[in-house]
Length: 607
Image (tube, rainbow, N blue to C red):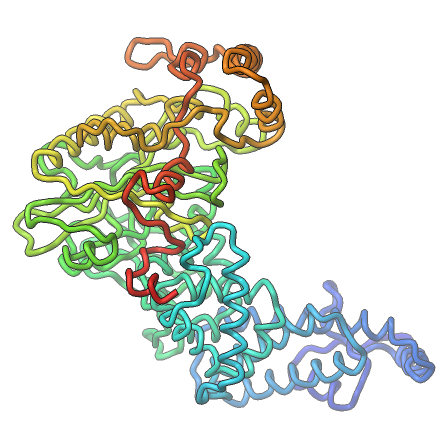
């Protein structure tokens, strides 16, 4: 045998033996794990003796990264705890040996931390480690980290900057997993995922986060982690599958049944049968959900109207088309006559008492609640990273104290695919569309602003009639979207003020009160320096001539473009941030909060 020839490692037993005997184990994409030939092994040993560890570090970094990926693949496998006990013990010992050798040669921190996390997940998932009592020092440390994190969030309102007792209680649960905790606080990306999952999420399932930590990024990619946070951690479940193996799943709808079905998300190869007998794999659904930024998917995590127990699940429902996809690709549209809202899937059911408690409002027994809303990435009056929409808690007839939430928002029909198309949306005129479940209710990266207006039956009738008209226009392509004029905030204000006969503007402001991105923002700052309103008006008109295009659409028989809109005449528009400013200034009665529901008044007072 040549002294230069390496030995391929084919089994875990061989890998463990090589590490125990301190052989020079390496990894390559082509060969997998292998042992260096005698010549390379001797050279590396000599280099170590004279204090040169660079080549060893490179070798071990690759080994650590490869074994981390190996453990991540194991997370995606259901298994029988007792049958695989010895195998999992061996996997654990190999991880321990790699970590020992990496630590001895000062390998890069990232590789070590991630391997520590995956090893901790393996140990808790397989029962090699059990949760312990909460350690006081770790509890104080995680609360301190979380508080520092919240204070640094620009989107977090001042009254929520401190960690509440409720949040502290959720955080301390991670201290039951000390080995995972110690690795978690050293890995910034996983730590931030954990803080969002725990501090902002509703009743987070920490066991699932610890035991299946590498699955969380996939849930983030599909926007499902935000929805699980909204509905509660019990909507991701560790369960025993039909083979009696430990598994991880989330609820999906099942065609022909009101009951949601827990389906494994580990391999993503499970087939689900959605409404109208539409069969897909979990991967096919996840891949489409991951493209939601560019194309509205035909799925949503929502409550079907026929489920009296209001159990959310991933379902066949297109929030834009307002209908269910058929096997042939066409859509079964939901009729919009009568009490059409009772036929729509929705995200939340509440009682009157809970609504009153959360939103600091008093409702009569026959009243519903209309809520012009906004999400903003910061307190600054900015035209980007924000959205205006309208929500309504509508009382359901013949249901005892049942109110369903309907969040509706206006978007551009063709979501921009790149920077050039984004610019076109900002200054142009596009076809608009309304989502019957606005995804902003699930957002955790923006603060939420909600203004509340109790609505008696007369006002509710006006509201639902106006929404029906808008839904029908959305379906027929007779809505336009213009960021400077007919934008999301304008839609929310128009619906609210028309319904309730309000004269007070909610989102409206002069364009010079805003802070657009470069280069328009720089021009606005210069215009504000001009000594008179007349000069400012003239300067803005010149900018309009350059920036506002004549490209438009024919809507309901009329040509519509930004240049002939109200914006051109008044130089005012509607901005989501203005709603926040008016609530802060006391002009409007509302709540601001980070997360999925407003904190109780007692929790705010505790700060």
